[in-house]
Length: 238
Ligand SMILES: Nc1ncnc2c1ncn2[C@@H]1O[C@H](COP(=O)(O)OP(=O)(O)OP(=O)(O)O)[C@@H](O)[C@H]1O
Ligand SMILES: [Mg+2]
Image (cartoon, rainbow, N blue to C red):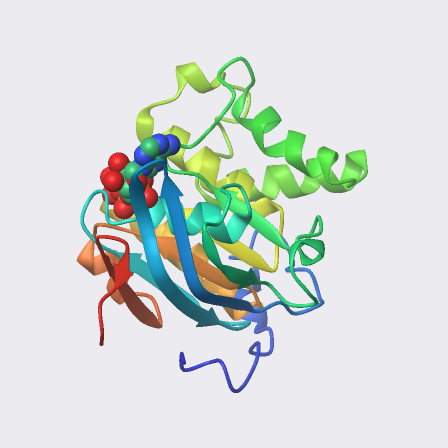
């Protein structure tokens, strides 16, 4: 278990509070993945993967291309069918994936190119039922936190690859979900922006979220509380 799991979420510290784009929803969640298998036709992408994490934990998932990292993220998010095993996010199974439970920052960003950066961050907040003022404030703060305070009005296609990735990070952070699933959220970023995003992930965990981040970057992985290594759909020991 990670070093924060027995303590639960750390108390909020005033000096760091500004790093978090949105307060994390208050009811704690946990992740309990047991003997999870996922197949795409003949391809066994995950084979008996188990993983647990609690509030306050920041976990990195590493592994070579095709090892199953994205599949694990998507299985936890409930967007791929399971061939075996189970994913328990607290308070039962699928019912626990309520609107405040899971946010995903997908590999490839998944931004709508016909919308501005701001609209991309705003839309899921409105879809999750936040009122116009709260959603606007959260979207503005999240974009500011990733250094895009001045770029919100730009269409996604007018942003660089790194700016697009930061917009996707802002969209995920703004939701303040109890579980943040970030699939290679720093792959397009320069050093300073990578540090900024890793600090934001850390801050969201410190605020009580569970943060699961996949990465190819050993330095990024080191910033997590612990590292889970996948190889050909299985967790490597140690
Ligand atoms: N939609 C799909 N249909 C068929 N096979 C798939 C699909 N998605 C993934 N796979 C296969 O499942 C395996 C795991 O893929 P996954 O995307 O989870 O790997 P990954 O570790 O995220 O890789 P990367 O580092 O390149 O993002 C791979 O063999 C891949 O080819
Ligand atoms: Mg992937």
